Image 1 (cartoon, rainbow, N blue to C red):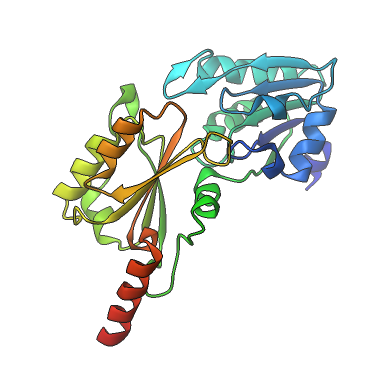
Image 2 (image 1 turned 90 degrees about the vertical axis):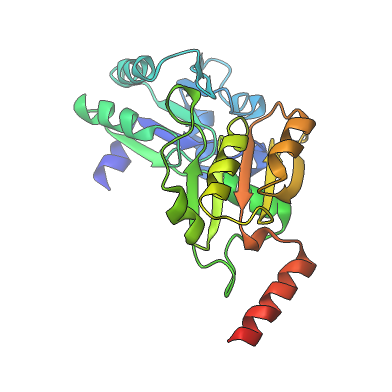
Length: 257
């Protein structure tokens, strides 16, 4: 608690995009910041909440294309933190969900710089809200798995595809738009039914949001045909079924019980 009270560096989540989904605490530290280091997925309207005299540093990273390496970002964060300025490292979504916060926290700890983490609304829950669909549901999806669809050198990560397929829960794939064909092939090869409900949401929570509904077998083609340019999050599982199909599934489960 003492470390948080004395913190002059904040790792803050900017949420999925819509500025109205920013937390009150994040908005407060952005408005007070002397220095703001922000990623490319942070909405410009959120960056504009900083003071007119604040130093704004774009350290944007997206789909492996870096304007600053992670090592450079860590060095910048430490250098600015040592000045005593109020520094905000602003990340899209939540800093602790595929936000590479570990490297930055380690660098700050090693330098003896106190910091605080401010959580943000992550894309998975924003997508669920946009779909008006719970990612967990009694009798259908008792677990929720967050995965990255983007591995080293833009390839597929080494997931345990069989275990994930057998989990029976809802799978949420971040940064999965470009690797979706390979992801789908791995899941089907691991035993997932090609007809498993799957949804892709582009630019979730923003004005350009698009929802593409299909199955794990058809969704890759739908995303390619849509020529999605914004960030894409993919959701897979029985909980994503259309309401009528989900009601039928629940009835079947109740009859089996």
